[in-house]
Length: 590
Image (cartoon, rainbow, N blue to C red; front, side, top):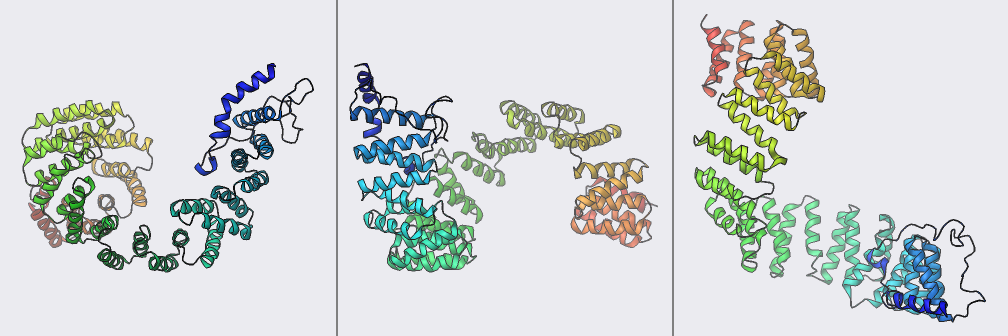
């Protein structure tokens, strides 16, 4: 018959997937689509409440119960694929009951469970558990459903069964228990675990999960009590030992945590994961020599472990032992995952030792990562320091071209080198290049504004600063700079004062802004107020320009002796500062 032929083909396609290979989605977290109608509006499967009909139950067809079951499985699969999970679960359960097939009962349970159809899921799970009473997975899902309905006593019965079934499989037991508790509110999970601990006081898996839930609830002291009990049962519990140290660390009992780990490792010297935690904890708390000793011990066991080589290199840097630091970083250059970091630190060491060519070579070996940009910048700065100015500029141009994402940073450094060399026109061209790449980059606009000031173009300076304030009206650096520029280069003191007042309201403790406020008050003839701000600025930062301003305000206020002391002290610290020298000549020559 035509129908029988179709059904036989369908069976060949789906039997392996449905009857032999059904896996449990709820165990693996598989998502199930939201319920949508199986077919178009008007179909008998459009809504759950409509009567579900089976089209092949027609007198025109003579099909066996076996074929009917296969057809229902097909309908269930199509319904599931179209999101009609209720219909899918109902059909799978119907066939499962007729065939006593546990795989189909599992299928019905999982679909109903993830569709949040608790009653249907419960019905399917209860049938499933009758077929496979020693299957921990069905007890897990029944436990979850009962806990969701706050039927704790019934849930505990299923937990007891799971504990007995998996008493010799602690790893799976741990996974199932955590899976049951993960959706529960913290307080409910704690109460459930308290009851479990009373029933099974020496079950180390329950104790460990209980300790973790207590930690998540920030109940550190009770968690330590639970872990203490656990460690009397299993003294070398792999997870409990580091967790105990972690709790002490969270309680800021670092000395106690370190001592505890040290003593534990004396009892169990072969626990290398604990030793690694111990070594890192020592390093984090400044016990560098002991940390080095522990990392060296680990290196004997894991001679090719990149993280250990890296840790030793950093620790020797911390103890100013460049020789040993170089030794470990050099070994680390052969490890691909840490080679760039190793070369960066080798470059830094060589640079510190004024071995500039080796520093450049190390920096050039860096291929990428977080240190790449800094390394390229350092190459340019070293070249410039060695008098190879043009080579430094060319290097920055090349790396900017090769690294478009970081081009702005390289162009910015190029402009700064040109600025320092007083090649202002070339510096301006370079800033213009950067602005073309990023027109609203306020950092570049600000630096270009300072260059306009250096070139004496005060109109452009003001325009640039106002452009920044259009982009970022609360840019305190630009507000302060504009106010200071107006106070220094014009008679628009009221406007300057308002701008500096705004900057001061945004950052009242910034020494630059305090200096600006003092300076505008000085310009307005309010010397006493000016001196107060300038003193505060000078206390925060003994800067040559602030010293020049403070001395000038003191002088005009009749305090010439103190002004001289301020200037002379500043000159000893900044003997080449042109502005300070100019102010001193202006006042002391009269």
